[in-house]
Image 1: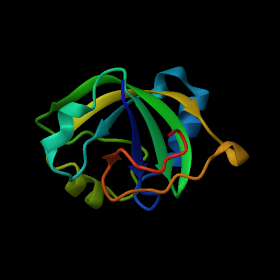
Image 2: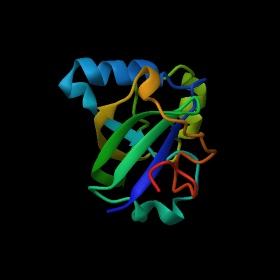
Image 3: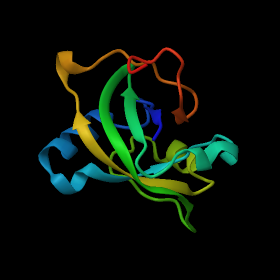
Image 4: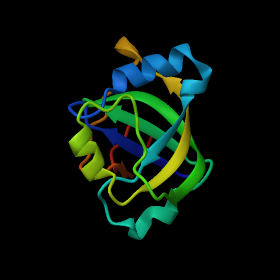
Length: 130
């Protein structure tokens, strides 16, 4: 199994509300996540069972596990935590998604520093888990 970082842009996605929803409702821990704008050359490297650390606003706000590998859909998936619908639709135009389950939600002083990245999924060299 591999460990990845997933970056959410706080200007376009409400990561705080997503983590609060996951903390208060077991069903809200399951979510669809897009690949984003990056080339799909490495998409198959992310596999079921891989661990994902989620960054938003330069902090680690959660941890998740991949429950369904990336697949392509015919339509862009909606997400109630999206702040900027136009940017969301442009970013998700390739319609590649995976399923993941949020296993840990971090709040307050329990959030470690974790810089965001331009690519949605990445494998940073100096992450706190390495």
